[in-house]
Amino acid sequence: MLTRTRRVVALTTSLTMLGTVLVAGPTIARPTVVDTVSRATALPAEAPEPVEPSVEEIPLEAAPLAEEPSSVAPFSTDPHDTAAGATDTSEELHASSDVSGFVTVGVVWQGPADPTGLTVEVRSESAAGALSAWEALEIEPGSQDSVPGTAPFVAGDVSRVEARVTGAVAEVHDVELVVIDPGTSAADSSDTLAPPVPAAFGGGSGTGLSSTGTTGLSSAGTRGLASTASSVPSGYPGSSRAPAFFSRAQWGADESLRTWSPAQGNVQAAVIHHTAGTNSYGTGDVPAILRGIYAYHAQTRGWGDIGYNFLVDKFGRIWEGRAGGIELETTGAHVSGYNTPTTGVSVLGNYQTATVSNAAVDAIVRLLGWKLSIHGVDAGGTTVINGQRLPTIFGHRDVASTSCPGQSLWIRQDEIRRRVKAEQSRYSGLWGTATGSFVMSPYRSDVYLVVGSTKHPVASMNVLWSNSVQGRVSDAADSYLSYLRTGKPLGRFVRDPRDGAVAYVDGNTRRRAPSCELVTDYGSACRSAVDLTAAQWSRLAAGPTLSRFVRSSADSSVFLVEGGTRRWVSSWDRLLTLNGGKSPTISVLSPQAVAEIRRGADA
Image: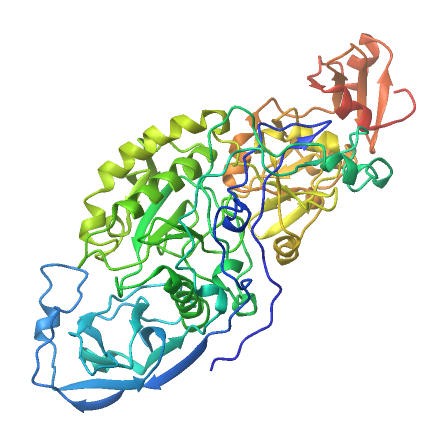
């Protein structure tokens, strides 16, 4: 079994609106976890609990090449590539293992991530002694520091598994068959659990701030948070219904296996996958399947968590995948090079060999109708990722050399796009409201701006107001917040990550600071500016250059800003004198921004 690092569980986040003082857009209704849908939904008799999978690694050893030909041609990145056929196949690597239960397998190695001409196959034996045909596993590239290997293969409830590697075996070394026993839980037996039903909006409780307009950094005005929270609805009256889903806890995710710290991306599209492996599974087998894929992705491949953001089974049920918040723009690990700007949905089963169920397609439509709407993505549109124009819903094979998501699912892409586009009409009131970067705990009043895997405490309510274009404030589990590094407080100054430009933010407008000396005059420093993502920077309107002379939009008094203070300028003549006889540029700021600058002696 692999060595594991103990981690704190990261729970599903929920979104609420920030009440009383700030309402940064309508609230997204939290898709109801199935165990809270209704008493009419039959739940397992036992409560779900974390289940630790067992991971066995068996070295593949050289063996004489079997005369039996492969049932599937070697996977090649080029359909015209004949290198695989020309490779010396005088030997094969082979391993087998006796197993029990609903196992997941894969093959990993040291060497190139995508070796040309390497064929990896597996087969299984049932308890009755029936051998399956050899099935080719697709090589699945990951990040540079991940372990090279194949995609996971859900073998199912079998008694023995075998793996063989042929072709360019000289290119790889330390090849291992990985067999994962996902363990069992009494809560897995969900054969009587009905498919999730849609949940009405407005079913939860929200979070608000006190009427003083302060964040958690000013504690005096936040003592009424608990009572305020219970009175602010998290729903958006008049909206449609959000899809229900099963949480990570419900499929028994052992959060101690997770080593990935959740990070946020910028959702522009959705990618559809299939998991491959058996299609012969029951409703009660699904949690074990998810645990097997989770252990293989998180531990064996070194991805730190399950790669897919969501998973769908053939019965039409939606399952939470990667930790970090289903309503946030959580970065997955499902398509190398395309993870940050997409969300990944994988259907359990092999749809290259079987026909995808209508129930599974219906679930994809429900899920993406909601998910893409809250991120402001038109399901009927296109987007540009890595210089390539793509539909906003596309299959894994559209950007990688793979058969995923299988032919029977891939040919329904146009249908899915049309149906998701129609489904989006139900969510017009929620359009784009989850693109925000602000999060807060339901139990505390501190608000943070999330940039990648770093959380920046928001210095004041005025700063929050001035950045409201970044979106609404979302509830985030404390366990998720604990995974984020704490960075410098978000004040008035931010930095463009591309060219290092520093700007003052007020009223959702960025005013570029011409020098660090001027930043100092405003009572800050260039080193204190928070680095934004390119998307966050672009959301702020580009305003005029910041001046050392300011006035409030509410009156005509002009101030000279220097040394962290604002000094009143008594007349126009005095203003000209202070500016070397030239007519100055005056920055017009909000009354709140001007008031933040300490008043000094007259200029």
